[in-house]
Image 1 (spheres, rainbow, N blue to C red):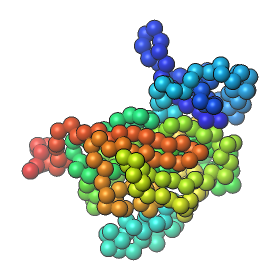
Image 2 (tube, helix red, strand yellow):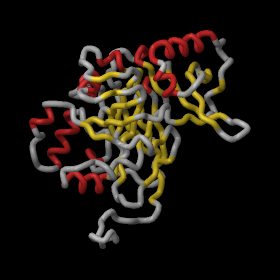
Image 3 (tube, helix red, strand yellow):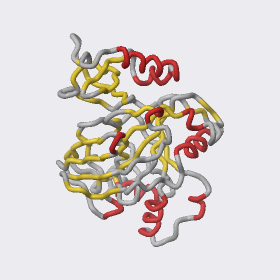
Image 4 (cartoon, helix red, strand yellow):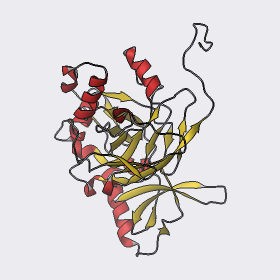
Length: 306
């Protein structure tokens, strides 16, 4: 199934509803995405039965509906799993990729509250001069677990969603020079959508060929390259000594040139960004304008430093 969260009119104002997409229409389902994931395999089976039982044409036409981020994650972990992107970053620092990168899949813990969906304007924080995107795929956890084995990890994945890990590159650079973060360099926006493809429709969990377009112009293609660390390894690693819950997400990190940083090519206010993941959907957004200009550089008393 392709599961969506969409906005519907209601007497008290717009409300968010859960649905399954089919042939240009959305069949409404009960509850919300997190409740569905909490219900596990029985809840997903019931959703499939609902979809199958509704005659075609009985749903809400997709055209004209506003799709939202498919889910509001309980927790966000974002990995650094593509070797070519990791090597490119090391080369910019004029150093080899550290051998520890090959020991385990590393990740940062992001902010699941600053969340945006398809069609939303991506905010440009006042404190950055270099806003960037990262084209990723995220696995969505669908089963609670701890100390999960790699072999069992696929059974804990409910599905997959396109993810844009928005990045303030100048701020991120400063944070990581201090061997911390990223934090403010990332925490202002994460974009998910347009839908969640359930794992039964994408059983191998591979990442499809990806294409970035800005204002209709192609910026890059992944050519189907896969991350060094697959989602089963990422999920197993994250679960060691730590409980994973339905609705947690794990981003893959981006492929080489799946962001502007790898190309020294930068998005601008008003640009139209398309992250095309084929069967997993195309995430489209507009880049917003900076709301003034500040610098996250302080004097000890908290005043801004020049």
